[in-house]
Length: 217
Ligand code: ACO
Image (tube, rainbow, N blue to C red; front, side):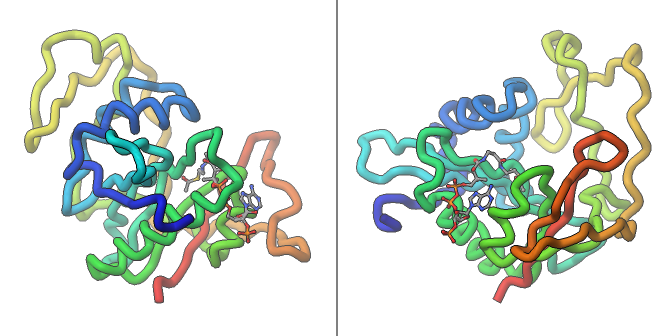
């Protein structure tokens, strides 16, 4: 099973960006930002990893995960946008993708993996993740211009570049963004049921994100 799949660093295989974009959009439809995020992948984080099926002339992308820096935690990084092809779930591929992702993180000197999830606490618990305090991928160590933009504005041609990345002007008609979460804000750790999964993940009628952590050994 394991031998049928390999994990590739996306920016070293840019021909896979289209497939990867389709995979992400099949789960979270927002094509514009997905492509933009994928094209930001680099050796120095953020780094996108793709799980591909080997036995095809053109590798078939079946999974994706992104590793991002956490400015306030030197030896930790944040795993996000983990997704396995809808037709391939429940076959152990998520576990394989996460193992490759964690190994990659260790290979670049990282010691802790963090993530957040609304509804996959069970999956991550199976892989050894435990609930933790909230962490923020925003911080003062490095400040990028905002890339979250109005899609209509993004279609305009007056794009600029920053560090080689195409960016678009901020839509000044858009409502102001919510305040950034405070770094390392101590949130309420959820109640655990006997199988280490919270009973419910709703707070004030809204879906609530849990933060989870694993020490990479
Ligand atoms: N609840 C409890 N256990 C689970 C769940 C779940 N929702 N999903 C999988 N598992 C268990 C499996 O039973 C298996 O257990 P075992 O090996 O001990 O028997 C183990 O976790 C591994 O399961 P896989 O088959 O490897 O998982 P899969 O390939 O289905 O991938 C994934 C899981 C990535 C969550 C997939 O369902 C998916 O793409 N979901 C939609 C996108 C998504 O929600 N991604 C997570 C967003 S959060 C983030 O990115 C940090």
